[in-house]
Length: 197
Image (cartoon, rainbow, N blue to C red; front, top):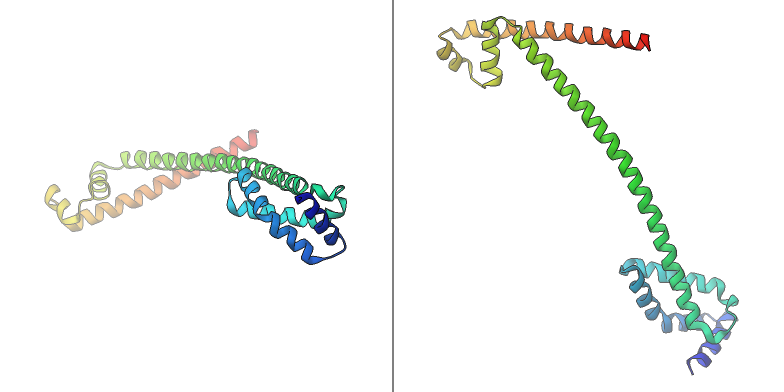
């Protein structure tokens, strides 16, 4: 009975009867959507798959060999659209994973370089502080590393705040000079390594 109804509707749709095409959509769209959803497990994607299947049906309806076989033909189109979607998704996912892995590798390398530079700078700074005269070293450590204010340092060291300000300023100037020297030495070493390569 359904096959006979399908034959009449398909025949009318093939003659350009848009109402017949709409009847096919009204009759089978829920089944097509349910089938697509069972395969892709996502309502929005299932709706897109059904829309693509309906477009395929419109273009290929003349290829339908047996008008009574409309339902299985439509289901095959839906299943094929779902399979195509899953393949596209798998390719896109694989590509995204590859790009993410490459970016993650680049990011980790960059972070490692940054951290290495950070450690080297801290090492250079620690070495420079060690090379300061004792009074300057103490003033820098208490002020910048222990977070003491000038009045607290003055009470602790029994030294005037002005003297401590001067020590800190002199220590900072000495540190800048030492760190510039270290940086210049490193740059010269890189130049020599590049020249040797």
